[in-house]
Length: 296
Image (cartoon, rainbow, N blue to C red; front, side, top):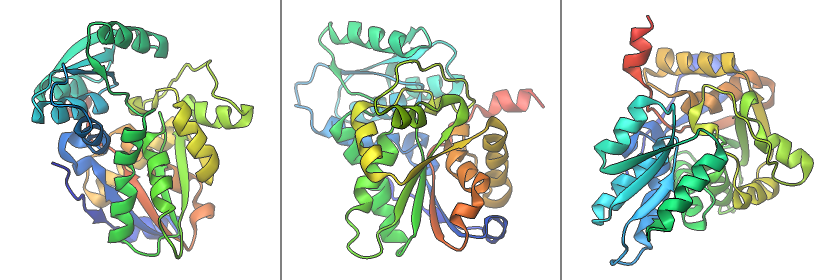
């Protein structure tokens, strides 16, 4: 079920950044994002008589969980914030998930999920879960096998499952262990603020085009980021959009805003990566193309 996603390169983007870049194409994973790795691992741990699973998601984890659950014959109920990207909602339904809308806040998500769990469904968190983190970490393990001797791996951070999993994967390198760097939108900077405060902040009002990175970072994930991630870098909305354009123009790939955030970080902080071998995770490609074309 899990694909070994390819690694792409671009001489032009290397010249633009002064680094040697290797793009891990998780947008080409089944369901369109890395999320299937964590969801499938978590679902594989459930008993055969599981009554069904439930989660909250902006879209990618929901589709991944619906897909993983359907392969085991489980129902999947997905809490989705009002205003979620239409193509992501369609993707959840396409893979067999049942949609339940909620207020577009962390509290709204958690309350709606709690109501579903009270009916007997098994919760599968989107990121703050050991099985999810372990599954997402296979992105890092796979990349390190495909491209030896990386100096740094750069990944986006929202809830934190991907970057914390990659950071754990990097610890398996006995020689030439790469640094792991996270990038987050300046409009959803709860990870940076939480690290500065020494605790997870609770005043989170994200305002970013990167809808997959609007969630509040998980407690487990924050602890792993604090211990194993070298830095968290901010990027602006304009820098995210520019990175999406660069991925399309030079790699001929479609990345959603969240999926382009890691490249945005490397472009915005190029001096930090100059003359290094850099792995960049394109985390998802579930862009609402019809909506974008309608705006042209």
